[in-house]
Image 1 (cartoon, rainbow, N blue to C red):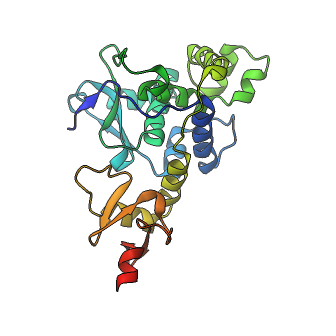
Image 2: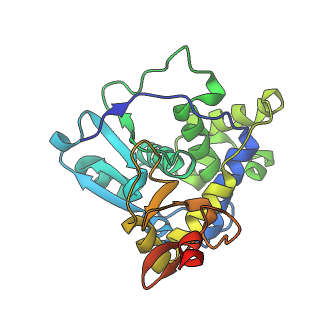
Image 3: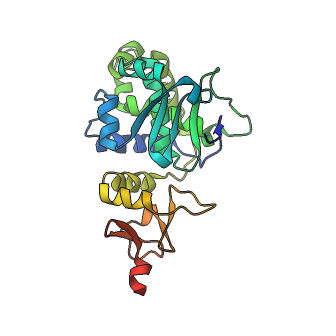
Length: 258
């Protein structure tokens, strides 16, 4: 099994950008902001997979996300709790969905079981993959407009199915928005990933294309010797643009050279 890191630095994102990414998934799953999230239906709509594993296979993690396979592995015990809508497990599941959405690079993103993940002082709060994933989970379950209602944290927790302490943190997230610097968001990457992922032919062609040593396999692949970029699907003007021909990913440069 690949190495599991506690945390790692990523490009800084504002809360609004994280919220937008969560809203994209909500919309693609056929939901409206504030709708109850059924885990099975949500993952099915987005072509994500939930993989229950024995505790001995989890390497000390409760759950971990693997972008390469669009999957979340989970201990068998927590899988049962998730199916039963345990609020803490739903909240942690949302955290891993955040990793699959925001952090598409190689390597496993895990929630460790022995007291949680270590927070490193050298990683700024808003550049922390772990911090971003938790904010994403809270934004996924609780749309900002519901924080403006007179409902208590307990009421919102019941409505969303996550702990009331997560609702309190969601309120804190929103209060801090004015302090956040404007940063680049990977929304184009999120949208393009979902566009391809929901197209069975394109998704199969992309994942069957060869990987490139030293390159992020979630972004770059190799098709018949030509480098292609996930974000440039059907972009004939890009040198990394590609399409699907006979169920295989094909670079536009390759087609032009024939």
